[in-house]
Image (tube, rainbow, N blue to C red; front, side, top):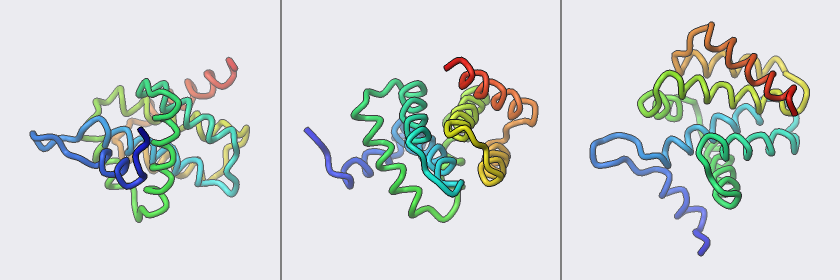
Length: 153
């Protein structure tokens, strides 16, 4: 049964009984950051959307329907967001350092998906990496791994 966008949005926002963030909130926060990379340059390409869907599947093991619903919700949430704090703070409290580096790698994959890295994408990547407390070495490694993954395709 399909849920309405509002029901889906509400399902991604709960906090668990211990005050932590549920898997759904981490998924949404990650998806929003991926969407922000897609939106950061002048043109949104099908390759970038496909890269986001692939990243969500790889990171969260979601089926196609769940990935598409999450992407739709992330696009809506991203369009209404005024800053990144809400999303990066969820990731900072919900993921360990290696998982946060993996998020940065996925973001790089989206940035590289259209074959062009804009200065806006590059700036956004550095900004998000700083907000996620990613070291420069890990930031560069994530970029190299994303580029290597793209070259293998």
